Image (cartoon, rainbow, N blue to C red; front, side, top):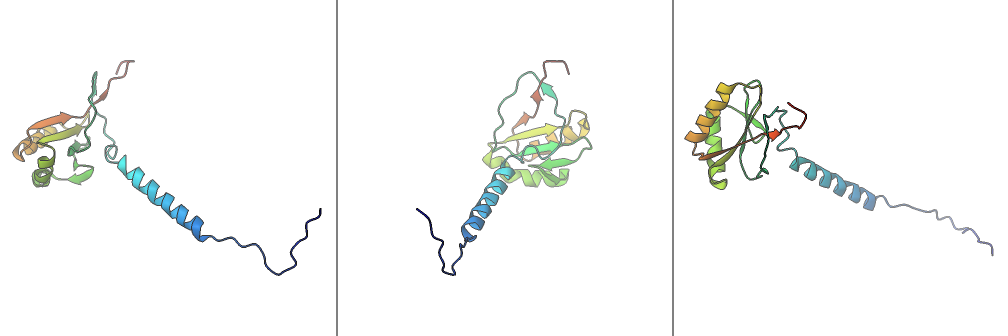
Length: 138
């Protein structure tokens, strides 16, 4: 049996519209999922080590202090004077608990001032950010 080629002038067509739709949906999916994990790892902090850790709660407002003494609230840079006002509404949803992440080699005075601002804003408890101690020393 031999196949005969169509002798009509029609060629094979390929519709790109469904493929473009799928690519756009994949892009949207990857943009959304990549931004979820970026919240906690936005700042390159060298956290102190601890032998035990507790799983982090995502609803907590996180105040970070980097090595240079810059203050961040949920990954966005702020100042000590603005921090109290920004924490107020967030403390209502977290029952007064604030996460505090500070660089191990950072300015201790800035960390104490941040703790004072958190207390004045209505913070009742601090959850200190650490990393698990390695078994090989340091």
